[in-house]
Length: 172
Image 1 (spheres, rainbow, N blue to C red):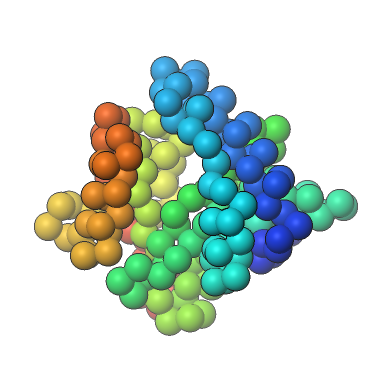
Image 2 (image 1 turned 45 degrees about the horizontal axis):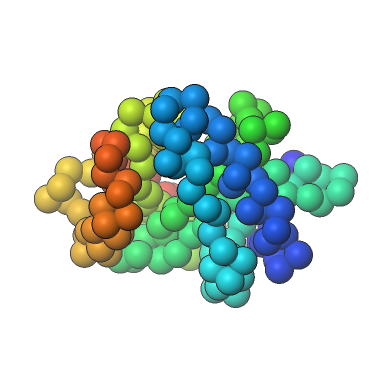
């Protein structure tokens, strides 16, 4: 397993990973999430160019099996998306990717990782809590996190309960 910055040649594979990962949501009756289109290649390219696209590769062929999209939000590193291909799930890949992101954020002097997620999906909020993330109460949300939550609500994601979470880094 290798973690590296995403490059333009990865983009189509990342869309495949996202589509495949949707199967888990279908099993919970969240078909709208399962059927949601992955980020466009233009969007993925923007993250790559901004230094916010990270991939986990299988090593031998350097083909991505997981990825994360990140961006700075209110002085923290926000994890916009993290997806692991189902064929590579339950091997610690997501955990390793989040640890790498936390290390990079700390090296850049950022105090925390943040993310938004579903509360009742086992591999979302409960998983992140096991990895050291804590749920932020509404009055603790920064302006940037509030804007992200507003966009999510407008996109219909609040049909299922969602929260913002934060994990301190070594710089925090």
